Length: 114
Length: 111
Image (cartoon, rainbow over all chains, first blue to last red; front, side, top):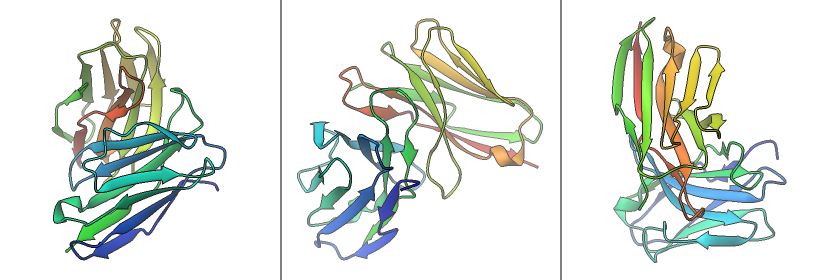
């Protein structure tokens, strides 16, 4: 597509429920990134995919968080047994790969755990 | 782990004044990028610097990469209300597996 698409744009869930966030990167972009941004805060790196492979998952906050990418395209970030501290905007970005060039961000998914 | 620190955290300026944000790393960076995030929006890529001592300009914005490639700065000349937002620098970790954003500088421009 023309840009990075994230869905849903907003998600309100009850504590303890599982949620799945989706990112559809720019067509042809091999690199995909997930970040978390709490209100008024900076961007917390979660995970990076090069193709379908995630070289480093150490940014994921806990074992309740997992992410996958299939077909070198769409990625899903799953949060199991959500907690109130998981409330944040989850941002996805993609790039054409390597360390060069800028990254294009999606508009994010605003997750609220009540 | 590696951190990229930015100062100041907040800056309020009168419209027309200049603004500078600084980005510092404890380790040598292969390159550095700058992003702008408007209130309620998502980060938007501004520029990438690669070479030691590199200086790039975009209209009223001037970006610099330090000689040692451990620091960078963004300078805005004669700020306008449209410059409002948070400016982030970002760089790859030494392992090359994580792309870190700096702590950000939030700019408020008073008309």
